[in-house]
Length: 228
Image (cartoon, rainbow, N blue to C red; front, side, top):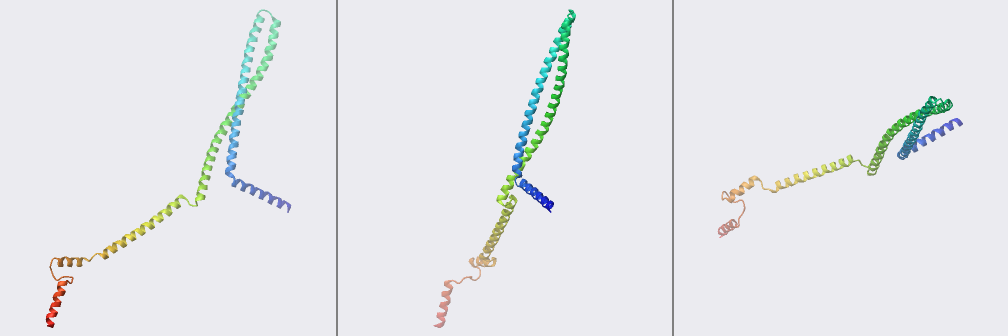
């Protein structure tokens, strides 16, 4: 029972930790990116220190070689003059310096190997840091885009779809208005038959299509004569 509860607590803690990381993933990425940049800068400084120490070791080794060459030359000169005691003393000093030279050469090779290792690690770290920075910038851009889209509630495509739908409704309404006006114009214009009769009447051909006052007066005169 206690073991199951302990396992459940561990699982809940893990889920809470993962949920926290998901919620604050971008902020965590930004801080981790800064930490990685600082670590790469520290690696550069470590490489610079190693290179400086290596150069110092090389200079000391070169000085020791020059001193040994000088001692050998003087020891040979002492032997040539028969100064065996001085030659023996020089030989002892040369032996000590040669042992020191061997240790310095080993240290120099160790510095070279360490510098090579640090330089390779730094190059790899810088390449990974560049990839990380590109990914971080892309993540920040996506986050800003998603925030803007979330605030507007609508994507550009949905906005365009709404505008296109409204345009279709406007065009449909305008088309109906134009058709209605054309129908009204057709209804208000006289028919071709009526227009032709009007033209013939105006030319004095056939009876008048409209009653004239002169015709009414003539009709009334006829009625007056008939009643008399």
